[in-house]
Amino acid sequence: MSTLSTSSLRPLYKAAQVRELDRRTIASGIDSFALMQRAASSAWHSFRSRWPQARSVTVLCGSGNNGGDGHVLAALAMQAGLKVQRLSSKPLAALTGDVAKAAELASAAGVGFDEWQPATTLVGEVIVDALLGTGLAGEPQGNIRQAIEAINGAHQPVLALDIPSGLSADSGAVLGSAVVADGTVTFIGDKVGLHTGDAPAYTGEIDFRPLGVKAQAFFDIPPTAWRLDEALLVDAFAPRSRISHKGNLGHVLVMGGAPGFGGAALLAAQAAARLGAGKVTLATAEEHITASLVRCPEVMARAVRGGAEAAGLPDTADVVVIGPGLGQDAWGQALLQSALQGATPLVVDADALNLLASRWPDVRRDDWILTPHPGEAARLLGCTVAEVQADRPEAARALQRARGGVVVLKGAGSLIVGPSGLVVCPYGNPGMASGGMGDVLSGMLGALAGQHDRLEWSAWLGVMVHGLAGDAAAKASGERGLLASDLASYARAFINP
Image (cartoon, rainbow, N blue to C red; front, side):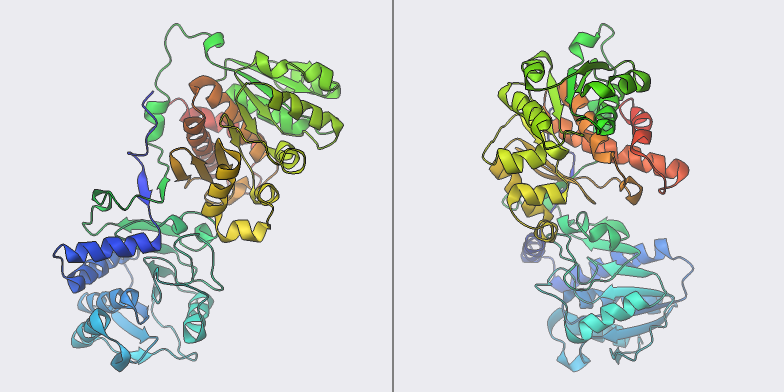
């Protein structure tokens, strides 16, 4: 397997970093207005590739450089023979610098102009959002907010320039109100806020256009995050040695399934088996043994009645998955205590996370993967879910700083934080918003950690395979009705590229 590295992943930046990249590009000799024209030309190409039959367009322009991109795009659309409605949040006389130059260019090309008013009807077949860009510091106010609401109230498709207006480029959170776009064309450096939090519901398909800027050539502007790519799977899952045996492919111990809560642990154990673990043991309440044997006889089911029977079990495995269906009473506490006392690497999920928050608030390890959803992350951090979702990247980093190891913050645009930094997973879909999906993920992570012996790498691969499997299942039969137990069979295709 190749060495763990972010070098093959797409870098993601914060808004201030992209502005600095823009500034340095201009300082290196590229005229700022020429760069604006390059952005508008790229956006126009993106527009035309998506809506080749469109004969009219409405472009809403703000007073910043994002608005300048919009003015130049309006000129390009007019030159291509489209009917153009150009609207501005400010009068032309109030514009300055490159934005004013762009507005004059559009007027010289014969593009009409109107100042935005709440009563304005958006008449184009497609709407272009060039209102705010990445410079947004707070909630949109006044006529900008009204324009955003008008765009969302229209029925036409929308292309956002750089980022949907009202969406935070750094966190992916909606700041009061944001444009819901069908596509977003983003420039120079891709933004972390386009890929997590609220963003997937607002960006549509993302088209990244670097405009000839080699962002990674600026070594003192390190990316704030990296975007996972399916191409990693080829190196990660090379053909196995012809002399492989189950003893060198990882022994996963799943600890969970308190009395009456057996399903979660069964899902995790079966997922571990399907993801290639050499051996899987399930330590669960006695009443679930028969169900385990019927569901997946390949899993070695073992009844555990309490702490005495759990003691020492973690030391028999290569990795322990603890939490699915664990419960928070004495039985669950005893199993988690035995896992924490052992030296075996852990994947910690579900009620084990809640117990960490309530019973083991100061425990920190470098050899575990924590997999909270926003509610569990909030309990671990001692804050609210809203605070987690307001800045998911920072919440994930804070949790990793406090607890060590690798943290997977689940949700739309799942985030992984480990020693190599912040990584974003672009895969997955709303069909995965159903019970048991997290249990399957924890089983997958356990299987990969047992085989690869590198927790961060395993977290990258597991989260990515989980999302890709969900997408494949949804493509085959639709999002609604997608079950957690459907994922394991689809995942096999991705671990055997």
